[in-house]
Image (tube, rainbow, N blue to C red; front, side, top):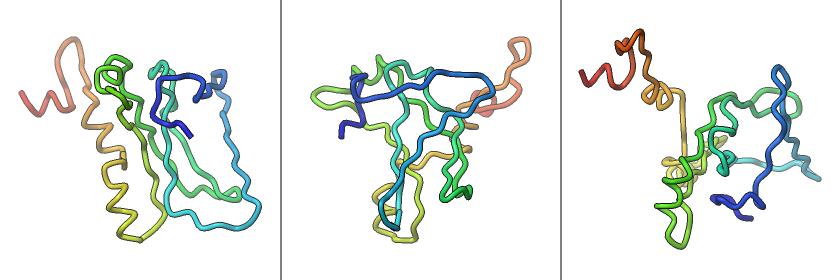
Length: 134
């Protein structure tokens, strides 16, 4: 399929209903082993993508985290050339070192989000990356 794209023919967007949960279900015809799940956030308008998400398997929570936003459209377009920048996010369910190494640059965690977050009060930086630089 087409994943890292700006073409909305290869994306979907569900209506936002405050308080409601949007769900995507995948059913496999037989038991399978999953080592990694690769996800791309909505990129036509990156501010409209998913932020918090959870993965459930047979009704049991197996992962809960924060989804990396797609890069701003201008950044993607300038980096595209013949092929768009890949902004995949991987969730790993294996101890296979080859898979871990291959997906390492695609793992996103709360610490990275915290590094990007800046807390301000009346123009004064209280916490965040910029506070550490001052």
